[in-house]
Length: 147
Image (cartoon, rainbow, N blue to C red; front, top):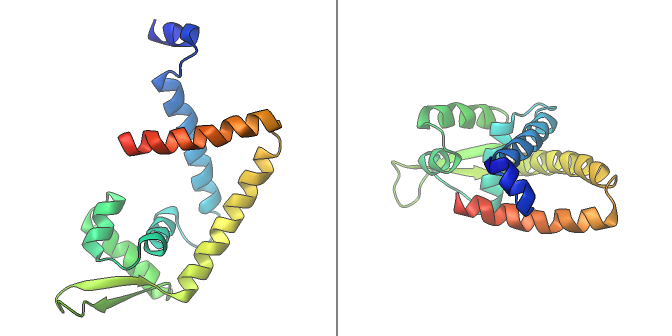
């Protein structure tokens, strides 16, 4: 009943939005996972690139994972020389994680690959649909902030 009312009013039904966004997220994750670095590892590199150095605990909280899982991810990234973990200058008991140049280059290559796939798919849309999609991106970003 709720779905019918939403459709009649021209409104987005929450379940339909969840399914569509879920399908898109899974497909993008597959695109990211087509290389030597996992989606979770890419997410950590992206966060370090956007927000700068952080502690392992801050990264775990931001990525919504347990500290142990973040430790495993950081070890894998450090083993490939993509990040560095160094003692905090102000508190030597804490570690600070930084993105290294090879990590930044790998991240850029992954983003370029996924962006190219998205551009190719979006080129199949009409100009009007591309404009709608542009507005939808803004709305999805606002929605993510509210959740």
